[in-house]
Length: 238
Image (cartoon, rainbow, N blue to C red; front, side, top):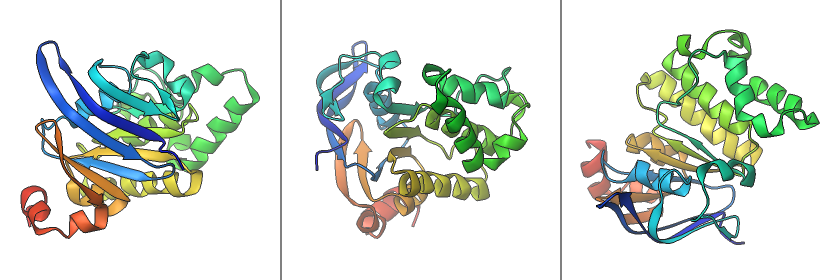
């Protein structure tokens, strides 16, 4: 089986400032893979580069068998790649329903559009209750769920989540991670999860990469990394 996503020797940054230095990762179809590390380690830069928001200076980004490193961000959702940015970045003065419809904009008018809308509001019942509410009036956890649901509306093969636990209560963090796991296990979605909350990320993912100063410094099964004394001391406060 070929990898759903393969990053090879990726270098990227902002202007003259380099951030990623030779990053290589792979994600198999249906896996949840975490990329964990401290603030400023390069996690968000990695996702933004994969998503076409940031341009790589060298290296390859292969998604679903195609090198997408030259493509722009707006070209990738139709190929099955979706990004949920940190904070969700909903349209605050649009309703929940309108935000979800924006996620499926390219499918609007097709028979699949209404089916997708029904499916995501079944998966996220709180969003059905809030569908006429402005997104800016949602709680932090509801906003995160709406952002994930909006991404699911595009019918992705792979969904990337940037710090979904930021600003959430411990209870809501647990609910969001359970939801991410359910998406992977029941819908066959491939998930790349970027997190500072290392303990929660390792608990929900199959494999993980540890990034530090733009380089991958550890990789392996999430359970193995979670029980590693060095990882516990450096990232879990144990």
